[in-house]
Length: 482
Ligand code: NAD
Image 1: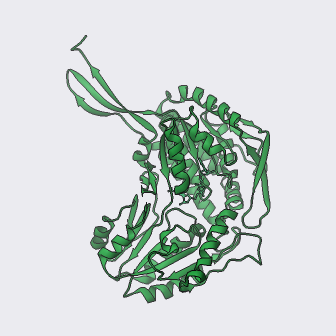
Image 2 (image 1 turned 180 degrees about the vertical axis):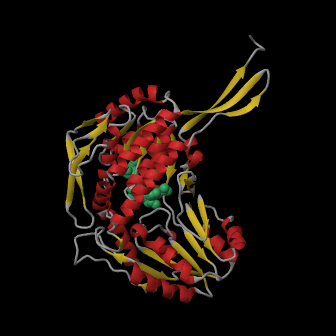
Image 3 (image 1 turned 135 degrees about the vertical axis):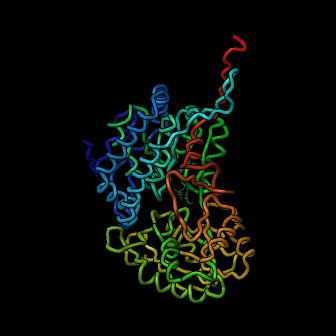
């Protein structure tokens, strides 16, 4: 029987299969109410050193056990998470702010991800096989992986690193964002009963912990998800020890809507995927390019749909889609973007409202900006909040160039009944994921990552697995020299 978690207690970091208390503790707040949440550990540099030492010991045996043994443990881990789903979803809403239905979706996705990873395997490739010799391309684990997790999707994005790292024979130290340490610490607690000590450890800490990990000589790889600015610092720091790294960074996805779409059918999906998780997802529709011949109708319908269906409120209220912005820093950034509306004189189709006077939470209602200049901040910067620009286009080549114009290249979509045309357009877009007649589809067996400044390397899929390994060419001469 899986352990039942108590979401109110955090006795320590999860190190070598035990709770290790830290000298100091801290807490985050519930972004919907401003109320303080529970005290969590703050790892010191010495705590990190100890976790790395245990990880290096654990790696020796974990890297040698069979794929089927690792898979069985990963499945047990998924079962333990499932047995605690209700409490974890509640905790995720308390710490992250997302509606509890979406928190449940995140956990259900996590279960699918972990169980699919358990079925996936990198196998040796035979490059040449003769009487004289066999040449294999084999993949070997890197060692200790530091998994650095953001605050917007802490369960899925954390486990999206841990699953592939463990299945490829690595051991992991996971570091949650200081804004959202709670569910990730509970996942570490559940793992205590399942994996051998030192295989999967969780360290909660302050702002210094990430840089300590990226510069630590005992960590072999950093799997990082977060902002572009931090990603560049991670790459710089990893360079000092020539660590491997995968960077999953910010995006500013274009959604291109062609003139032949059925607006009633595509609009609910596009509008929802502009505002889901209060706009705090890396791959949402963040620049919506609508063909000029249907622009006015699309805009008016999007405003109506958003007013009637995209409710803002606390994550435990019924029917809420837009919860609070997750933290004060992000709240200030999104507010600054809303302040640009008046400063720059952008036309608004739907005027979002910052609820500052009537709530302690970080609530901001959705805003739709009506055809702002292409070089305005709302078009060129990722807002990471519930505000989205609608833009007009007329020529196919022009809209593709505009979709490709930024330094980001995470996702993009093209919407048209003429699937061949949409696919032709999609193939001209530089992004790690491009969808025809959809947006934000993800799956554990499908590689996920960014072009240009949206990232380096891929996660998920066998392609993602490979990033947790070194390539080793193995030449086996059978008799010529012996
Ligand atoms: P962030 O870059 O501020 O923080 C991410 C993580 O890095 C946190 O755990 C943080 O504590 C840690 N960190 C901060 N400074 C560090 C440093 N110098 N060295 C090492 N670690 C450090 O990002 P965030 O604000 O938590 O997340 C939002 C951003 O993440 C957005 O830009 C979003 O688009 C991006 N994101 C990308 C993906 C993706 O898969 N491409 C997914 C989700 C979010």
